Image 1 (tube, rainbow, N blue to C red):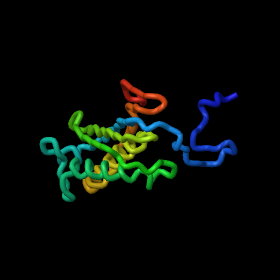
Image 2: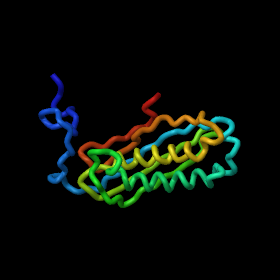
Image 3: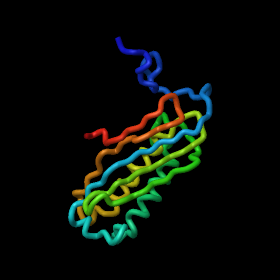
Length: 167
């Protein structure tokens, strides 16, 4: 028999989808950190100048950062059972790990009754998709991978990962 504490939270007793009721939870500072990797083919990597990738559409990394923050703020409009929350902070960073790999990380924070994991994951995903969109004229061989939650705090259970879940 399945451990009842391990059941899916977005299903009721009759297995119908539902939003989780957070009305009885305590407000705490909730944080989440997520990341992803984008592998650039040579045609795209050659467009990198300094710490920025410049395309005909403009500065790619700076635009992707803005898109990631904007998406995090709209997560509840994209993911059906996410609670609408006013983020207190969302920080998206983009860095090159080598000439062909871009590392995207997002940290989301809110003082609330529900966590911000989906907001951080949405931020990195959208930043990566924006990078893809802005560079697809150079190559469609861009690969987005390893979208993952790294840390979350402030809820019932904290999560801390020390390495990629794909390793």
